[in-house]
Length: 342
Image (cartoon, rainbow, N blue to C red; front, side, top):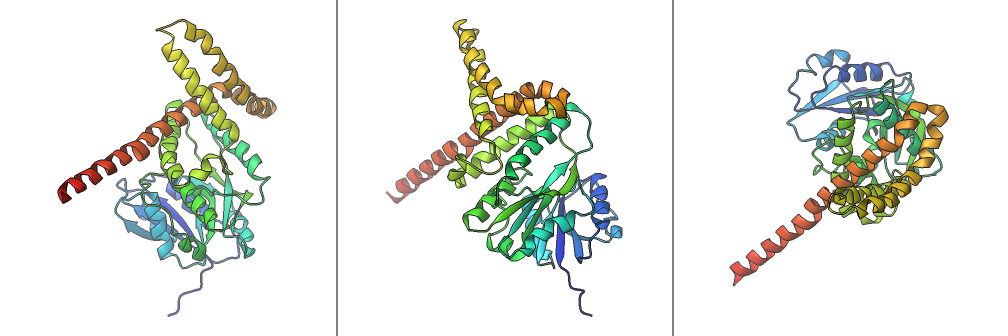
């Protein structure tokens, strides 16, 4: 019997998804669209039993040993029957017109990829701050005809173009910036991507300050590897505000001055310069939020400082690992090889 033609394959990588994956699948099954689509859940070696009986929801389940979300998404694309592949994450709930909003822009043959946007129902300050962070970036991206970064929480690609670009880099074993690296690679190859803010998914952001710090540190750490492969993106990309780079500079300088204060009181005065510079860079973000969310606006300078410091420290640690230590190991190997040849 011939298989029913499929237009779209929606791929969801999952590792120990808990109850959230079921909410995600329900949202995908309730899409208001006349397009034919399949849902592929890629089990990345889950051990919590969260996918037990998930096939009853009418989805395909593909399994692999735990290799990370990049490898899981690539496997999903290999299994996909659709000419268009969509990605979302197991902790997301796409709104009912998400598929049509994502795929509609791909009707233009010049477009290879589409990025959607986040919503959240959360009430805690940190989660609301995270949402405002994204909304600030969205405002910038709306002004661009094309973008160079598509997050995997709401991503659509022409399957042939995705495969031509080589898929996600499996060196990234954790859910982090593998989507940045892939997007930068697609951009460099000449594929064009766009942002559709109306293609929305609900998401559960970090709620605790500690989890937020850890996430930002991890992003900075792996971003060092991305920038090693794509050094031109140090100057600019469509996702990163230029003010963030200033915030990272001033936050590191402030931390350094404060750390030296016990050795010499003069550093207390020196700390005033980076503090003033940092506050100046955060002022536009704070002012924008004053009417929209006063509580987040009030706490934003502190949370922006946490963000900038965690990203900076992660970038430094990642830079040491991916640049300095790898270079040294390569030098030692080269010397050892030459010694053996002698």
